[in-house]
Image (cartoon, rainbow over all chains, first blue to last red; front, side, top):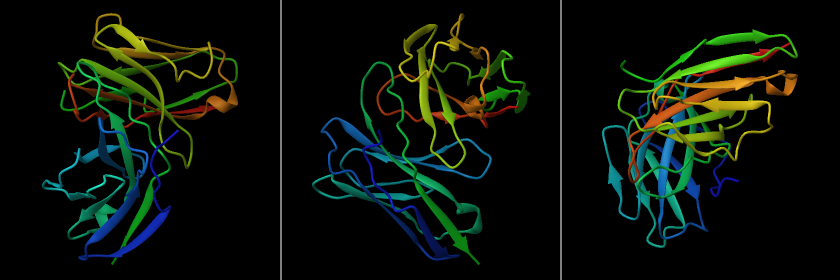
Length: 113
Length: 114
């Protein structure tokens, strides 16, 4: 079962920042927070991940609370092409291989013109 | 190739028919995952390979589902005696080995069992 809780849907005006919350109150010390998104009829696409520090890349910013029990994905200037389902996932780090991603139902973000 | 390639993109099977779904991962990616995604749901994990070794098949829903990756590259997911509840999108993902690496997904194969 997914270890995260997300709102089922959100709307955002085009050009504004989209802030997508995620609760992961049972996260363990060796679990990263990952965000993926899935645009209609496509496979999921990696956005960003982090352990405890805030992270930023060309797509988004990830803000993780100090107690690591929640996080927020920020799309700074949402466009219509950002309309998608956004999944917040916590994932155990298990080198040298990988562990599977456990998806919940995600948040359906609708960007409105 | 540039990304993960899955074929066919669409498959219609009669109930009871066997099907084989193919995944070509990104060259050099050690890890390969299969997921099943029902309509309106998030993807659900089926099985995981590291090179040719199937390290986790805990998500396979029944013994009708079988996956292989004999040379550590291309993988095939086979479903025997398909049932209507097998109708879903089957997604393949690959990644490099190691901590916290991102997984790259294919576009999936949409299987419809009639």
